[in-house]
Length: 383
Image (cartoon, rainbow, N blue to C red; front, side, top):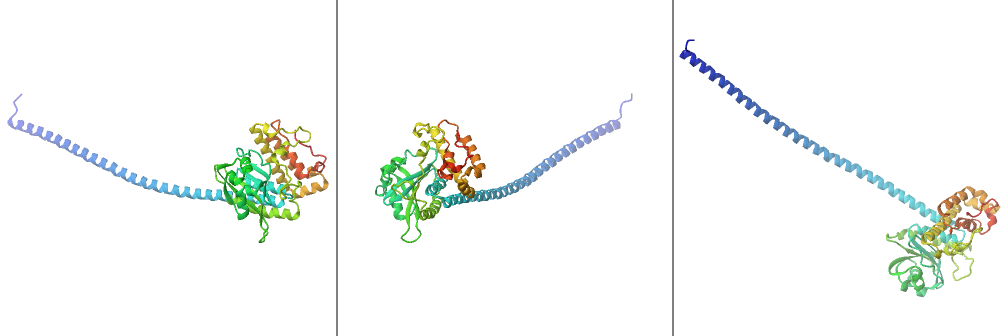
């Protein structure tokens, strides 16, 4: 093989350097392209992320504002609906109290209507009548935990109860401490008084003309942990005054007893009613001998009986009147009376000491203490 000439050697070296330069240029271009592509990609992602973040932030803000607006509107609607329902329920309750007061045919029914109405708004309400210079306990309503220690046993002179005297003098509601100095020792002990407890006394006023207005009764109101709405209780006592005056004018408010107080009823107090024997059943035990749970059950049973019979008289007054006339109340009110009896049996006839308070109320209030007026088909007391 012939040795390469200088020209060939030069050409080969040139060609090698050219190819090397091309590779270097291609590599440099590739590096540049990769670098540019990396920059382009990184910038695109950053710009896109920023655009997305801005758009979603704006969307979230608009979404939250819209949700807050809709929630506020919904809450306002619900609050208006709840307020309207509460006002309607309150109006119905006050209307029922007013109707019961207006339809009361005697002072016992008047007192029950007043106490039941006030008891809807306070855990303990006690009714006292006023005659001359003396205060007489009449009846009360009390929730569990607010039962009276005992019923006041005898009339209290006004001079011993300055808080009551203030009510008579001002003819307005009086807030007082439940101390012996304000209520008298007798009422202080019976009502579980305390020098740290505040109570309210509300007057029941009869007489419309100047010089004829007087406080005929006082409603003692005690609250629990939550304050009571005295405005509602004042409305009830305001309604009770004219109703009592109408009864007094008709003579229906005169009691069967002839004691100190010529205003309120001959209705037996709860303890006396509890001790009254039911026909066909042994005499009920003394409440003080019963466990507290049974005492509360007896109190609820009495209240159920009074309320249910009052509702029958309220909503079926014509049938009650006709039933008395034909001396067969049960024949005209069988459906209402049987439904009440079934509910009373289910809710209360579950302890041996229980007696049929509903029957006693039927007899006392519907039949005016005349068993024959209930009719020959009346099934008698529950057993």
